[in-house]
Image 1: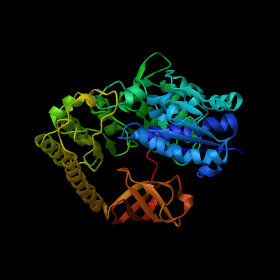
Image 2: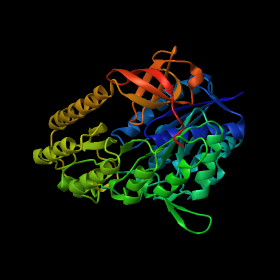
Image 3: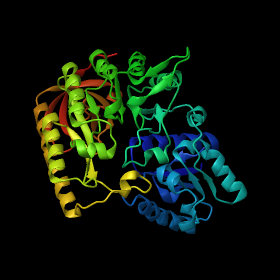
Image 4: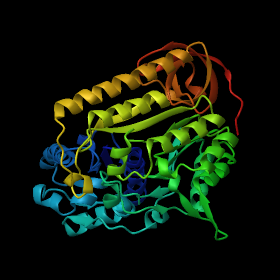
Length: 446
């Protein structure tokens, strides 16, 4: 049986896309996934263009793929994802041994592209934006555990000044409401208990319904929670501008909606937020969190921060740190700004030294790590409901799961508990996880 190896960079959307690439090649060529590139017949690199030097990292990885192809000329090498969408045929100029170049919206054609490479012995490029066709042509969803990602929309139409996503994944396109529900029902029948709804701007979801209406994310969550077997729902990634009152009300009404929200704010400075074209102020962001905490007082809120955006002053940075203090973020993804080609922000003058940017990033990350530790420490002695996802990564003799606020808990227990919601008493707080002991099975929250 032929095998495919996929190296994935970037966000959860890319992780989802990689899983679908495997599904496509399994259906078209009976391929199975391998974690050993030297055993693969097809080598795929699923790329991300968010971070600095993303293109250089791609060619570095491709160099390793090339060594394998020199040993076996029949190996097919493909580049997918956002860098592929952004660079297109330019990849072939630097790496002519690449056989496939495809974008996030054309991965469903992967089987056809592999067949064309084999038949015509030439490279194939397809980085078009064929609307919703991708989801219409993907194989039936296949569960690989009790938790699954479900992509409900593609692209983004916000055009933040620093972001390349609208150019690499296109503008927002929502999947039809019934199609999303059908996928979740199928996954639930296969034992999936936690649905993680995905989109570049997931809370702007607007799916057409069979009777002609439009469903927003809040309505979709209500229906998802009613699916037999679904006990927990998460969604990511959100934009504060689209975080609606209806979503806040969903947190009040739907117990299955996890007690955790990831809402990227990027900065606490109104001046920087305006330059980023985010469309909201720090006060408006805090107002939404305040309203959310009225219905979920102990909800965990995590976020994203960009440090060193062009023109960021010490005062701007202080505003960000004040926002972190006011909100008490549980965790964050934070990094130094890097210009992305073709975005408006790439043209802005940048007078802040890298040393200052690194210093500010360290201050921010240390502050949030203190929050993370404080919250983890406060969980010791409490009983938390976790979804057991399987054996622990560090100790296969233990099992592991996640709390509602997205912390990994390791504990002694049977693998037969995988897929079950269990109550666990937290006994120890560690830097990146918690330890616990089994108390009882949890009641189904559905």
